[in-house]
Image (tube, rainbow, N blue to C red; front, side, top):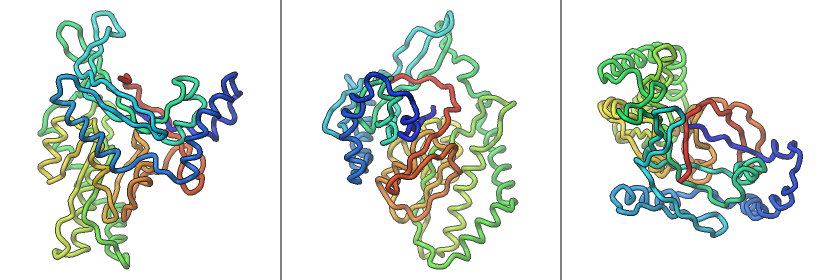
Length: 328
């Protein structure tokens, strides 16, 4: 589940194909919108998509209508539960609930993407992730299953990670920074995006990063709350990741963390929000830059960061996940 952000700085080094002039002509409008500062993502757009996704859950003929940046419209049919022939004998792919694909300026003006899919002015699309399972028993194949499904085991592991984090030098530095900073902005909410599932798919590779990231969100809420005093009200904590399992949701709810479905967490972001995200598989920073000016953002260093154009960031993230997906 990885979103590769292509950018022009890479494309101009590629040998132009025979349709390169056509590509430049068709994407000229997108470039003009970008240069004019037109947002590629808006809260109104995300709210409308959220509404349609919720309606599709109970509709007899679920469809999602998305409008493009230059006025085109495209309808996506929701096919949750539909199966396809498997990639191995005796298996089948099953389509999961619909997910959102966020398409940045860099992607929409990528010559490589154009050669693969043709021109599109849609900054949002709908896709289905797929899981491979046994055709008869319907049991997921090992690489698509979580190896630990016990709430107690995950809870104990998460508790240990919280304790280890609170005993770390990084935690002490964070606490000192928040407590000593002058003119600290009023914070009413923390929004954490794409922190991942705390359930491991392999015990050998259980690195607990997701647990530590959630521990950061929890302790940051407490530190900020104390910094502001009781009169400031409670700091709400929201998280969003389509990867959350029922085990994740059960544990997070016990910590008074509100779990939101994509794209609702983006809509929550405003000037009194701290945004957390680490190696996200969606272009979080570009989306946030278009829809809000949060009080603070905390993220990791992006890999292969390439350039900043007119103050709007363009970067490439390496694909590290081989999970399958299919556009509807």
